[in-house]
Image (cartoon, one colour):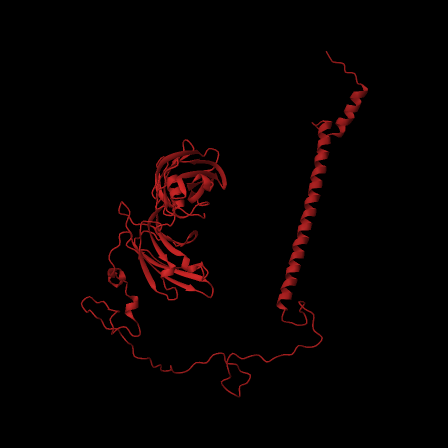
Length: 447
């Protein structure tokens, strides 16, 4: 049977569209092809425009480079030079300086830069001097022999031996010996002290060498001191260092020089090796003369006021310092008729501010009294570097003569408050915790 198809208005429009499109394609396919053609055309136009721009840029660069080349080759031409304008008046032309004179006077326009000679000139050399061999078997030259040294003093270059030293003239020293020079310049009021050398120092317990240095004190003020350099690994250090002390001519005979020799160990602790005392009133200070003194273990001359024996013990676990007053000696300036007794007062300071003080029992008046009393001070809450102790010998006059007076005192503390042996005692206490360190301290009225 045949199928009957009815044609509508929409079927007519589809038929018209299908008639205009390609066979086998729909209307959507036709619209996409038109857009693609437009895009391809636009891209082609942009590429052509970019190519034209690139060609123009390359051409202009080429033309500019050619112009630069022309200017480079025309620099010698004054008419084409553009570096500076042409002056209205011509600059004067000076004659060129010739590097060598003309060989021929007539050939003025011919310059000869070099000239050679047909023959080599003869040079007369002095006869050669050859040092003869002193020992033909060994083939070595003895340059220190007098016949081979012309204008040279061989003794200046010969190494110094022990036989050349002056140490053989003196007897051996137990603690060492020090050499120095002193001279006083009254015009500028300066005392020049030259430290020459130290010899015969004792070695360490294990036989090792020492690292010694010397401190020079101008007593009675121990704060006026100078320090030399440290010499490594030696028992005979040579210094040759000069130190200057400012001192008036009125006070020079009242002062005493003290040379103190120390040793520095691996822990940077100082150990006293010996001292030498030179009263300036007993020396001729106008002549430069090398002097020597034997070192002594005592750090002070017999003090006029006397000494006090103190023990220190640092307990870091308890934040305490234990001060032990053992005894005193050489208290020669005591007036037995006016004094009823003596005692020791120990005052602890934080910086310069008094913190706490304690005192011993009153003892009968004696030149060498014994106390043997210990006091404990707490350092909690305060840096150990700011603590110091003032140990004073107090005298008790009779009742009708007034209050107690200070006979003499000594201060023990860090480097901010103490000097000399007082400072060394404090440092040894810090380096040896839980151990008692005993030392003698000189008494003075002015600290």
